[in-house]
Structure formats: C-alpha cells, structure tokens
Length: 499
Image 1 (cartoon, one colour):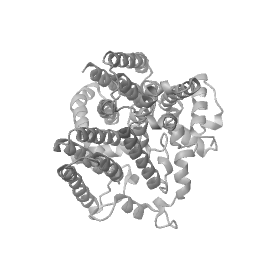
Image 2: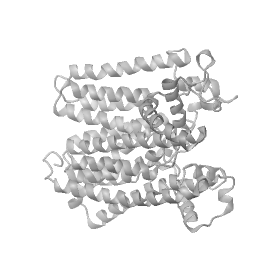
Image 3: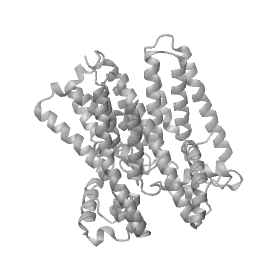
Image 4: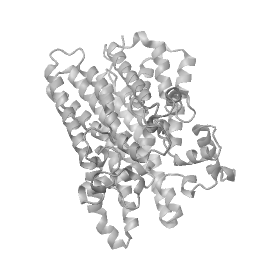
C-alpha cells in the first residue's frame, strides 16, 4: 500500500514539475471547449477559432475528434472553476487570466490522475507476469521517466488517456486469464469502450488485446459476450454523437473534415495521400519521428529478446508478440496520413501507444536477464537506459514547436540534434540568430511554467522557480523511496517468469 501511495505522490510531483502552464497543444484546448459545450451550453467551437472543425448540423461548427478526453476533463474543469473562480474574481483577474489559470489547473489535475492510474496499473501488470516488486517498480519508473510518456504528460494530448485505458484493458485481461470471471471481462470492455469514443482507431488494441485476453481460456463465451456489451454500446454512442454533430451515422469525422477542408486540386483521399512506404519506414528510421530514436528502450527490449528469447516465458512471448503486431498495425494505418507522425509532436504520436506498452517490459526483462549477458552487453544496454532518461528529460525542456519551425527555416538535421543545439544555446545564452528568426520568445526559453512566468510576472516567477527547484529534488528522492520500498518486499521470481 505504501508503495502505491509513493507512486501517486510521484505522479503529482512529476505533473507539477513539467506543467508548461497550459495544455501544451491547441487540440486539448479545443476538447476543453467541447467540455464547456456539454457542461455549460457554450458553443462547441470558440468564435475566434473557425478552423477548429467542420460545419455540422444547423450550421454549427464542431471539432473533428472523439468525445472521450472532453468527458475526462469535465469533472476536473468543474472542480477548478468552483474552487478558483471566486478567488480570481476577488484578486481582480480579467477573464483572459482566469481562463489561463483554469487551464493550468485542468491540465495538472487531469494529467496527475491519468499518470497515477497508468503507474499503478503498469506495476500490477508487471507483477502479473511474475516480476518481483523490485523489478516491477524499476519498470514503472523507466516507463515514466525513460519513455515518451513523460513528454505526453507535459503535452496533454489524448495519448496518455489512451495509454491508461489500454493498460487497464491489459490489466483486466491478465486478471481474467487467471480467474475467468465476468467482472474482469466487463472492466476490459468498459476500458475499450471509453477508448473507442476517444479515438476510433482504438479498435486496434480492442481487437488485439481482446484476442489475447480470451485465447486459451476455457468456457470463454460468457466473458466474450460481457466484453462486447460495452464495446457495442460505445459504437452506438459514437454513431449517435456523429449524428448529433453532423447529421450522418455512416460517415467519419475525418471524412467530413476532408470533404470540407481539402485544398483545391488535391486528390480525393488527400488526408491519406502520403507515400505509404515513406510513412511506414519513416516510423522506424526518420530522424524526426523514428520510434527507435525517440524511445530507445525499444532497442533495449529488442536486444534482450534477441539474446535471451529461448529463456523468455511463453506468456511474455505471447503478449510481446501481440504488442509488436499492434505496433505494426498502427504504423501501417498511419503511414499514409498527410500529417506524418503528428507534425508538432515529440516522436510519431500516432503510433506511440503500442511502443510505450512494449517499453514497459524493456527494463524488467533486461534486469532479469543480466546474468546471461556479457559485461560489454550489460554496459551498452545500461548506457541506453541512461540515455533514454536524459532524452525524455530533454523532451520537456523546450516546446516541440521550436524544432518544427526551425525545420521550416532550413535547419533540417533532425529533431534530436536540433534539440541538443537549442538546449546548449539556452544554457550558454548564445545562438545563431537565423535559427530563431520569427520564433516567439516563449518557445526559446525553458518550457516549465515558472520559467514561462518570467516574461509576464517576474516577481511571482522567482517564487515559482524556487518551488519548482524543490520539486526537482523531491522527484528523484521519491524514485529512490519507491525502489527501496519495493526492495523490502522483494521475492524470488516465480517459475513462470523465465524458463
């Protein structure tokens, strides 16, 4: 119990530490407006944001996204408004400042909740595969601090929500395979259902994890039926939501957006006109979006599996195979999308879900395989683990927009190389003026909220930076406390962990 409390505390501190003072992306700001539409009856798209979505029924403009993240934001937005609005009015803040403060609170509350859920579920998933508490805790810390999860905590895209839901689905199926009761199938189905109304390509993990969850289980008919009930309900809800917005139950929001926003003279399938093989191989080898560059723990996992495949238990082989298949499905389905990799994003955000789930197993498998690795192999992989942590820390230092704009200016040596140069320029207070021509000052400074405050409220920023530095010290102390707490409950690995 104490370890889980520490994981929750770590989630709160990390989310406070990397918070940029907003959602980090206009996509989530638009989803918040849908929350306000549901909760307060405001327009689903702000009047000053006409490009936010296509025109639907009765001439009303709607964002072309699922409603899942907007529903998650709803309670947090209600809490933030109820708690902070009276205080802000007494302080004399104008409506713009009030909106900014509410957005900061919404981002922190939502991301802290989802991060805590993710870490707790990931820890239990690792234990279910026979890893010791110590190894499981190390795996969870690596997922948080050594993968792109950290950047998507800072940038409140819906990726973190979808990853938490997929982890909940896997956790429930692990329970179901050990004890095939209907309640575990129902939990998996509810997780899949919410993922489907968040993003429609959640059908991929629903199908792949569903096949995994029910394969090899006797008398699974009732479990499959219970699982499919909420999934079917989500499909019906999604079609109703589509009709409510656009008056059509057979279309998709991407298709409607494409019809209304496709530039003249472009192909009918404009949104999916990117060269397939360029997109497919780019997900692996592009210097701007490669999953191998942005999530090096994937390389660690691959090396350990190649070296120790015959020692890995069949249960682990099956789930790793399923997740690898899921990654290929995601990569193939997103390969032709015109905004390759998500454009302004750290890594290829359209394929990160299966990659991050695979990375969960990288450090645990590496740690239990240490006795069978040579000295140079151990040092090489430990170096990659350390590089992964440094890389993800670097991902939070500056807004991802900077490297995207620099690419337009002709600095096209790759995101990671440009990020290294930008951090060095920032620390040394130097830089080629051409690299930063026309780029807003907030994208050329540290992206953390206290440092962003310096441009507008320098006196307040001093105190905020002091508090941020305290959090910077607390986070590694919490990580050490988690590892020590897990070590005190260390047990021998069960026989089914490794053969």
